Length: 147
Image (tube, rainbow, N blue to C red; front, side):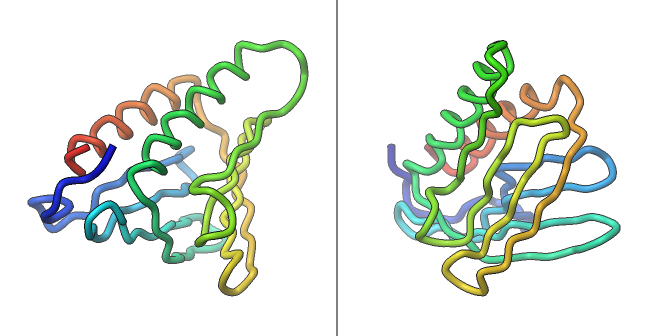
């Protein structure tokens, strides 16, 4: 998969690839610009305790990887083995990233590993339909990015 050239979106609003929101706090990934297969983005945390933004970046393969992570979470939720699923996006080490932990409550860790080394943990009480919304947002982002 690759992205065609051009702007990310026709509107002035950034494309949101990810939004995990429980009505009290949220973590989102907003695409700011694209050059070839690389997207510059920001991870945004909003809560009563902390509001923060950190720059990140990803490519077309990472967009596909987010869909695969959603698949793995959904499969894990149907599994009764008791292990808690956790996955990183985008791949750890290159840029700031999130670790998604499918526990009760869900937990999103935002890590600025190559930069400040700061990690912020955000517990999210996501309702049962969150994964459907996440898949719809993923598909819309793919369309907006021309993938």
